[in-house]
Image (cartoon, rainbow, N blue to C red):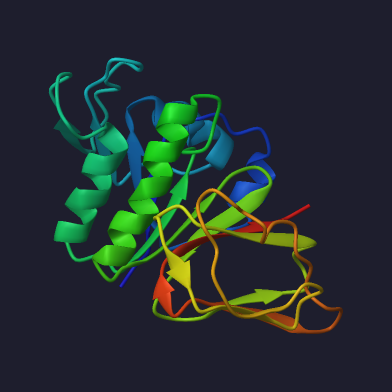
Length: 207
């Protein structure tokens, strides 16, 4: 099945970085002010979702879901739920990490929501790629200069990092002590990160 790319309204400066990670057969969902990124990304929406409080409804000949402005779900959360219901198994979130810290944290929680639903999901910004490490180990090749593992759920036990400058074996990472930051893959190796209990946010830095 095609991958679903959800485009939010946070700022994107390095469009070339994001475009390089898009696929020709991606299904694009643009959320409200994410529509401002159409030209920069060089793609058109397959679906538009939003309450249009921050961007005018473009009235394009594209399926559009108009949401009420007073609601529990943000436009981006709604889009993730809608596309999960439509059967998409893989997601990429772009334009979701930005100056609004509240929106950024809420959008990162979408990765947790999709992981809970058994979906594969990543988020990218101008400098990094983010994903949840839970039941399956994550691989980090040495094209990423740095990577970090952060506890954002409350518990993370049995944390193991291999083939990295700072290895871990059966460790615990607490929310109030984030020490697995700015690790490095050993040259020519592929690092592995896993957790026996809980979930971690893996952030891989492009440059």
